[in-house]
Length: 377
Image (cartoon, rainbow, N blue to C red; front, side, top):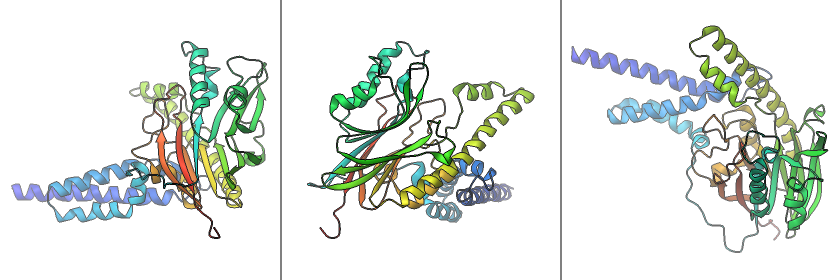
């Protein structure tokens, strides 16, 4: 009887493990599918971390059982290794080569420096602390999304407080907003000269949207690097939306309403960002210089958006960071939606997520890039 029960249990666990592996395979396939073609693929890809974690737990289970059935989750683990690296990264902190030409880049969604956030106690002081932290950071290039500046404001004249005061060059891609004529959008500051810059207005119909990409060609001690500061379509999900969905559990009608609302917003975001990333990549691939593409992508590593970028470029967190690298400072944990990607001709070192600066709904990220010598040098 005990042997029969053991065989049944093993068969059940094997079936469950097989289903998880199939889930993984379907999830990986869905990463390749544009959400505009088949939007449910976005949700399946979004669930892929769950399959990766469960497969790893099955691997541990079969190892502890000393069963040859560990071959199934182990094979899946090895085949999906690059996706596990997106989930949790382990690097050993290589040192920057001595004498190398370097460029340190910081990217940060500054949440308009909390200028509109009246619920934050002591908003002017919170804003000042954040602005000063950015202005005094030792990075060479700053890519700031949801940037906010008002010329006639002591607290929020950020073109001056971050740029002019410290002798930085800048490329500005903002729209004028609110009654006090503030500037809102994306800005690139640089300690090195900016040769030329431009803006990608996604789909040409969003010229009055803060979602855009700015680019600047920067002269780094005689070499030119093109840097992009990107802000893709927001998820448009607020903390109260998530709280309302949780609180509706148990009330079938209310839960259906709230969950459908979340699903609609996610679907809309998947489709918008998929189109935006293709427009961005067309511009990136036409660059005559090595590129660094960084910003708030509003998509996790298990999305069509991220996957398309990862096909063309390397991710700085995966190459030079550690851990989960969560960048969203909000009610949903473990979300890495801010990233830095880079092309050949560069190598990433010392990637950091700056958890010490928690005054925005995003954490800043920075990396040091080594400019590789040209073949003729």
